[in-house]
Image (cartoon, rainbow, N blue to C red; front, side, top):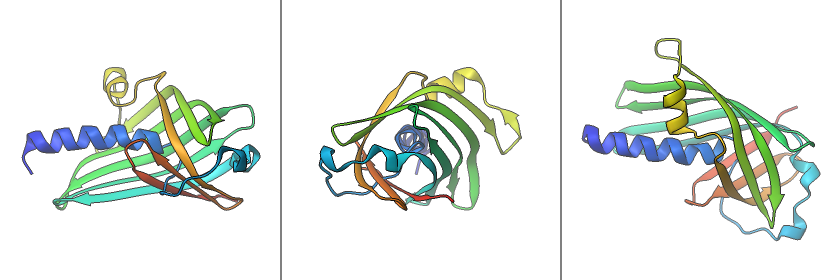
Length: 165
């Protein structure tokens, strides 16, 4: 994979992962009437992994959905090419959420980040490019039970979360 292709792939994947850093995903349709919003309240452990042409992307994060419509997600995003780590960042997302017609809508209000490869804060311009504040992501709620949250973003990326106790 050329550097140019890698950079485009990385940027697309990072933007796609943003949709999932607040939720989790799969691929079955849910009727809006069957979504019990109260089941979303609380803490969830989520993850996503993808490999393509020697490049491996992984996101591991915890997200909390509060009954007042706010959320917070803390997690790590790591990209490796072969055995070389090319990006390892830790993120702290804060935002607002709502359920509308069977979709989870999440709006980012604040993002903080740390580059784990050199333990430095990510710059505001870098964070704004990857995760713009005020950006709203829409994910289909595929499954929402007491123990499992599965959503699917508009690009068909699947995330799955388990309830944290």
